[in-house]
Image (cartoon, rainbow, N blue to C red; front, side, top):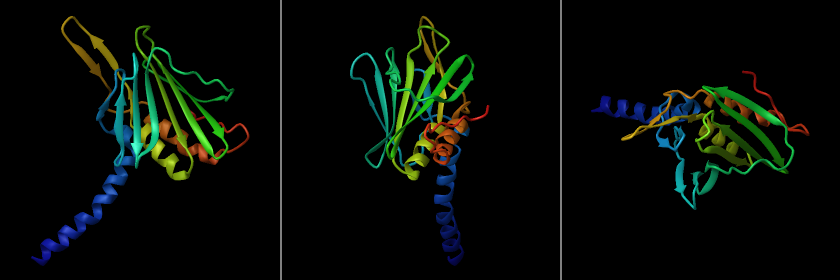
Length: 193
């Protein structure tokens, strides 16, 4: 009986470590939240609210009733109106990702656009705001699970083909976390490919 108690205590000790470790490398896990042209592996303690206000979709990732990231899927994404320099540009399988950081006093806004090589695909526009190092860590974990999928339609089927591993997740997470080190006037950081 004492042996069982010791083994149980050891497993309870390891549970938080494995959950935290899973959040650190979500780019290596399969998806569990699907959009029209993308998917995410959602970190622990994150929920997603999906709304369809009109001819577009909004996916809001929440942690403790606070928005971490909003993903817009539609044909008219809001473009960056101020003049922040592009701080991240990635491409894979014909898709192009552009990332911007806007510093708004103590807050930072991370804006990501994903352009598809196919004219009929909806645009993806991701927006996250941070106020603290913990917010940055949470946003990095959510973006670390992001990947672009291909939507295929035939006469009788619709298939969403998503990669098992994220092409961009690790770089997106490093971009968010690394931006804490670069609070220069421009506030931009280029991630090598």
